[in-house]
Image: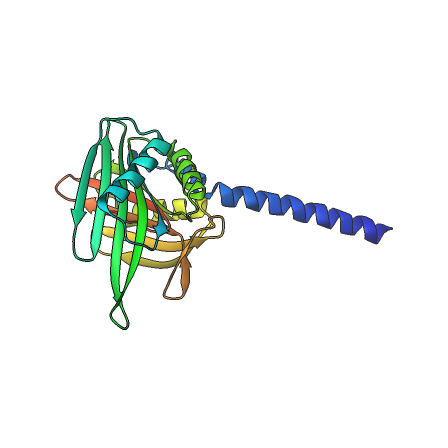
Length: 250
């Protein structure tokens, strides 16, 4: 009887732990967002990129425009916005962009053509959505979930990348820079896989099991990318934090 009770307790304990882990996996990005409240940096912008493959067949300009406008309507993006079309030999891009004080939103339909064996051609069409929030980050996960749901409705798999940029006046000494990066990594339960350092840059790559998305580089799982850079002209230190990797220039 005692053995049976012990087994029941262990099962319940396992379920509780599993539930906690599931919550942390789902809310891994939220941990990153809240971390910025604990470091003395001012938020600059939050950059979200989401993309997915739409089809493997050629599209005309009008078809690309129709698809882009369909996504605009699903997102609830109100006019006025700018439209653009660019066509090259192996690449076509139809884009719609809307800028406001709060955000910069770009929707692209991208067609890529690649030469393959036996003089063949491979065609891939993608939808790419980029949202940059100015001076805030709280609603970025709402937009990510909404776009992911839109992609599901269109029978597409979504991949995303999130980068947060903040700044601090002046240059931090090496020990302070490492302390801040370590603090964020610890908050994310991130195991450091590699680091990089120059006079004005300090960065690490790591993996957190509480974030389900990752990339593989040199045989290692990576889903957290942190970097501190110093701009001498502005006398400003910038902190970049991304899941899974930083995709903006710094």
